[in-house]
Length: 328
Image (cartoon, rainbow, N blue to C red; front, side, top):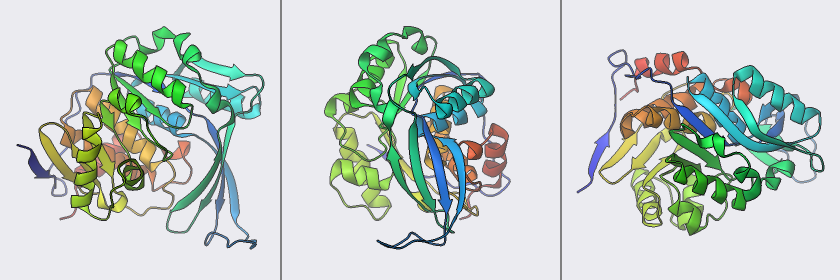
């Protein structure tokens, strides 16, 4: 029988028991230059509003790679950038962060991915994305870099590249003995073949609804969606619920972890920080509830800063927030 655990910690009473053992994380990375407009609200059809503008390095896979590295993991990525200024900035950033990029290829025909983002005062966002070179990741390009998975405990992927590339990545990761973690974002149909190759599935509430056809709107509904996704093949399912925290279900445990209270100014990248912290902690051997709690702290810290890559937290920041606990 499954057990239900509500994880709450009084402020100042608990510290994460990190093992201190460095793990390797392999990632199928996506690269998008984020062009961010901070506005009072989204414009209506035909309306022009003024806003503040900034550019940030982003893309779910890139964000997750940076976050995993800042949390102490050894990180190696595969992916594709354009032969342009944006692509060179990403390659320089990977080098600066100490992330292995031997499996990142440069596309001479297609530009680096871009995203146009509107951020409102409460931190919520709307995104338009042009994947460009990201969609050129193929099974053949994954196969050219078998050393990507050597020594990796966890392999992470999302849906910002190509589905054939994602399936090939997951299949090779499994063959190499990696635990696979799929963040099915942006929301899109996920074939059963990919779910069958997924050990840990991490959708948000809207993505879980799209994958299951079930209604959201509460913890019980989230658990029902997690159960449905496990029946489709994923061993462990974690559904993020924003300010309501996250639920996680595996073969033995059903866990609800409340969110940490922070002043959010930009939620872009918060889900990526969550996924990276989850992957690192699971790779270190943490129990599911502890790993999800660390992930909630990572997502909360990321939401307190503007931009994707700049907001990815350090381990010290996550530990500091986790030590404060979650208000009852």
